[in-house]
Image 1 (cartoon, rainbow, N blue to C red):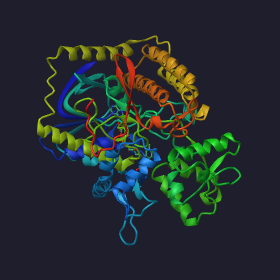
Image 2: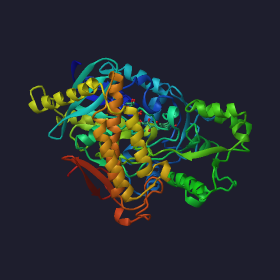
Image 3: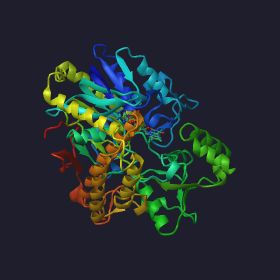
Image 4: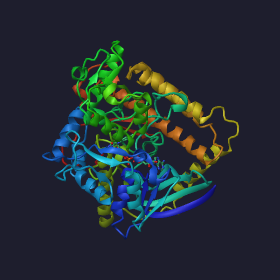
Length: 564
Ligand SMILES: Cc1cc2nc3c(=O)[nH]c(=O)nc-3n(C[C@H](O)[C@H](O)[C@H](O)COP(=O)(O)OP(=O)(O)OC[C@H]3O[C@@H](n4cnc5c(N)ncnc54)[C@H](O)[C@@H]3O)c2cc1C
């Protein structure tokens, strides 16, 4: 492989929602060199690739940021960081305005006010939201973008970030990027569990299959503290198309009903996890299939729904058209997806301070990869990108982020050699016992059956988790002997590696929250009740190859700084 070394002030890993907005914010600091590296192409990558049709986190008329904090806190039964939620909520409307000024179409009523959908949500025509963001990044003359560069490892010395290593997914080029500060914005982790649709359609999942938990894995390996992987996210989705249900539930106030037409959502509760749990229970009790009741909506609402899904999940619109029946003529069947780790919906991810710096000095996290701050969605990810960028600028001014003087460091040269030889090992292996795809399938089967996937109605016990851990460890050993015929396949090798690393941490978290705080998201059958002893964050850190659990008290202060 050819070797390319780049020096920059700020490295942003992942040119998605949070990464782009951090780039736009840092674009105003002309004295800083900023580099965004993206494994795909920032014009259409990550969660926003296909567009979205609403801003899910917005402070609507008559409400204040604290209302949003209170809502998120209640939904997560208290296991959130209020300092993070508040600093995010205070910026939701600002980042929305910036997006509108950049060209995002936000629907307005006859008075010129944004059209609200429920209490926290506004409607947009968001099919092109990602190209708009990418275009704004492009205009910043101190920000460079490298597409098709897959980052696999951080450069860390004495718990201080120095940059990252990666490779080009098309050409045989190894990258060493030296930076004074790094923002990890690689999104959450999909594909850990066996998905709803098998075989050819297995990547028809809710979360982007390309967000494979790289950021989590790199952080875990570098010894960064992670939080709340035990708060998995399971999305309630339209059956088969896996299209979001919020558009129907909030857009036309559709209720969840069972096969007999009974409304069951009020029986189980209305939090995000309870809506999934109710659907699972009704099916277990033989009352399925479950639906969102759309029959009887008006012709105008029919039209609105067909159009709304074109902005985000066109397959749902096609399904209605193909069946020859509009939503007003048939209810929409719903189901839970496989579990994901995604800090933009639940609270899993890096343990950060209020400025979004992780426990590794100079390493920041924003968006779905950052923990403690659930329900951030698009605007929350944008806000966190901005908050992280502003904190970096503050630290640059104060002189606490320093030159990455690593060229002479022998320890780092050894690390570089090891990473490069790992890449080469996979490229040179010509008789692998198993392909990446076979190992991925095996991993998903293990997680599905023993770590609370769809097969076990999201439930697990400690014996099953122990088996899951044992088998994931075996798969990690086998994954070391797989092969890559080209650079694109090398990316698949690393995606598998990332997922396996995340799986192990996830299992440890599930095992250590010895209670059931959120039905379905963490349904521990050995401890089926909530236990106030666990009114804590369950955190973890990899130390000498072992996952060490850390139980932290709930943060009550307005700001939080790492102290231990
Ligand atoms: C299908 C779907 C619909 C949604 N609908 C809405 C909605 O209507 N309204 C709303 O408010 N929110 C919605 N959300 C949530 C919202 O889109 C996300 O929370 C938010 O966009 C996450 O931003 P992010 O920057 O963390 O991740 P992303 O925007 O996904 O960015 C992560 C980026 O990192 C890149 N990357 C990953 N690994 C690497 C690596 N190793 N090296 C380099 N680059 C890497 C990825 O390619 C990607 O570009 C939706 C999410 C999904 C999945």
